[in-house]
Length: 365
Image (cartoon, rainbow, N blue to C red; front, side, top):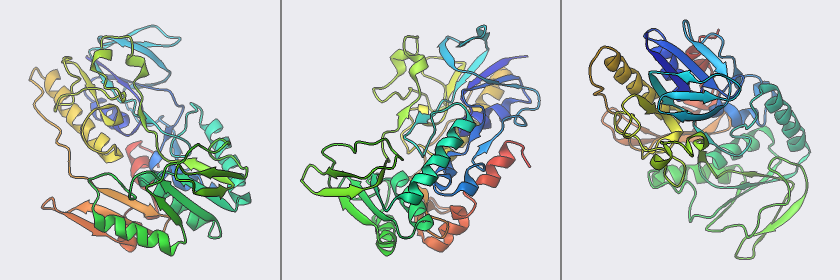
């Protein structure tokens, strides 16, 4: 039976591992001791009820395969080297190591208990704060703003965005931007666009401590706590110094073919944030890419060529501003873009934040 190693247990990793589990000997390697549902991490940042909901065990994911908690040191061909373990010889390897992002959107700790302790401290800090600075006006900054405004209505929130407008990704429509800006105004959020901080605050993100910063134009901003909502980086350090390094772009993403095969490597695939697929990095995209990989490896296991290709879609987003507000840019059956307001957005994602969907995927009750 073929051995398949999946490196990374995020949205794409669990999808591809579960899909291939009936077909091969699957080994999923993940640094963290529990799955982290990052799509709900910003709700957990303000609400202690959610603190436990975003961490889920891998124990039920695979029926036949194995989940190993460990850190991959390097990959040579299809041999995977894990710190503290013997090398794993595989027939196929899938890179699904995702990306890093500043707290609280993502967590660097490999232990859920450590991440929860940091969340508990953040909750205390926010309860004592009177003002917050959000640096970055993309989807993460806006969603975090909505969570803060909902959980702490008296909190004074300022967003600073260096681009000339919020949601600067060119794939987002002006209609979406205007809807979001109207809701932020309703929430009393101060928005400063076309401005860049001359220097970052003196405290760590999420740390309580009054400070004053200035934009490069000389405008001053005071706050008690701040969050960095920019700076995503592909997790590809384990490929540096290997044959795969030549396929890495300066931003750390890895070159892949439409079949999701790593360029020049027939039995090596990649999915999710790690890849250089030209679209925004979303959980649904990682899952769809994983389905392409499942189909193509299934074909290879049957002696056929991998023929399914992944086609990036037009930009879309479900952007809650807390449980009851937000806006979405979706695609209809004809592929045309349409904008949904706060009620529809709350119905789609705002209340549950897809927790039930992920628990089902992990085979959890």
